[in-house]
Image (cartoon, rainbow, N blue to C red; front, side, top):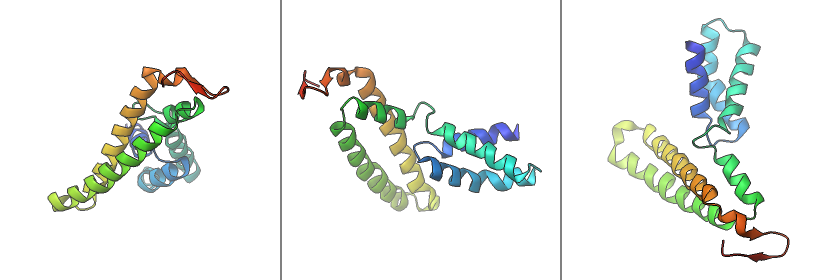
Length: 147
């Protein structure tokens, strides 16, 4: 049961974070717990590494997959603008708001805002991808059918 919870924690903590950062975050949180359970260090690192990697492609916020697919299809402007706008409004604005409105949360408030950013960006790029506007972009001849 403890390994299942550790795997779930690694997947959640590593969502929308680059692979190396996901591993560092996850091993910092789960490593000591696994060591107290008697798991050998190499086994603990490989276990955490596997689930940290898995977190970058796990729905519902597997933004890496959708953003890369949209970029490969030539749809880069709108996802880029959405990333910047959401980052500034939700992470910066929401984090500041959480810190001032809920001081009892301490540093958890900005982290909750960052989590909201990840979820909102994931929903946005998933909807953008599923709508299929990227199918009307012609990369080789420089024209677009209204994408």
